Length: 218
Length: 218
Image (cartoon, rainbow over all chains, first blue to last red; front, side, top):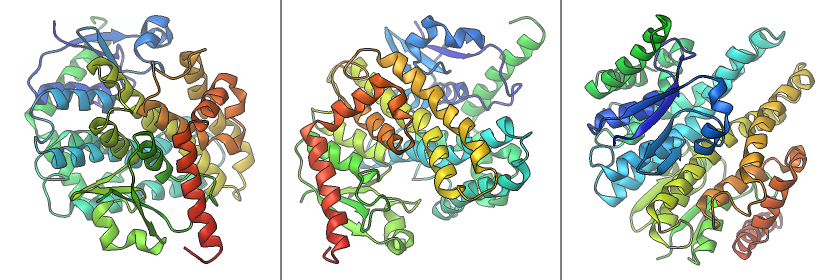
């Protein structure tokens, strides 16, 4: 039985690949592992059946041989630990790649989420225009540091790893804001990752779900 | 040589134990491993020597036998993986505990950071009072789900694990807001963790650093 990954039946981003199931699809494509998708409507996310898999009612989850995991960082790490392609074999290099997974979700993503909340949840509040520049600057602070670390390197620490996969997907969520394009090496880093065949397969698969839903043919 | 952990020379929270080095001190106390602390002033955080350890100029970092790690989630996971006390031996239970580490830093902590930013960085802005309730509600949404999951259980998933350690420290950062006390089972969960001798040793050690700095005797 292939693992089962949950995803939105109708992606809120209209197939742009920003929902977090893409991280798991991409990781599974990198390691060449087939998977099944279970699509969930928004109401189903809050039902007991899904909360038993995902206590915060989120997608994606990952089920394999009776194991049920939540949180993309945890799922991508699990996939990387049990197959060879996503984490270096050398223990020190592997531990550093895991540091980058956490940097993606706990240092870079929080200001990205704050910006997303400002744009999605507070765009009609009277303070929105005056507040937005400071929120963007908090994102820029992190991008400057990440850009300085990356320099002219291809990936964050040696070969492509699960750390790059997680970081790139966090950065992709910034593209609509224009902030990513302020840092040429980061924009090129993201484009390099998007050119990977595994990413392209993952992106196409989530887009196909959205287009099928659009045609009422899920 | 014991591992070396970096921490603030002068804790911005005045010894209340909210800086992230406490997570690493606590994990090392749980596994009974001695460690050395290297204290850094704020200016040192942005120096090349520290940026080589921590690309975002943060504390804590962890150095051991030539391995240098950053991000508390990664460090606590590393400590848990190489010693027995912080992660279950059963692979499925271990993978779920790691899901909880990620839930702490990527699902619960981002709205906590947003609230902290509102209080620390935007308290003097004209919109602060009107905006704060919605920011608090975003934290409450996560606490409600976490409280529903925990129920009457002692810890998040079976025995105390690195997932509890990370979650409790994220929740501790909410105590000044009063939000934690709105959820009795979460307040009791945090108090149960604080009563652990390993936590108490970690807390006392960071407090001693602050008090020594106060007396000009670091």
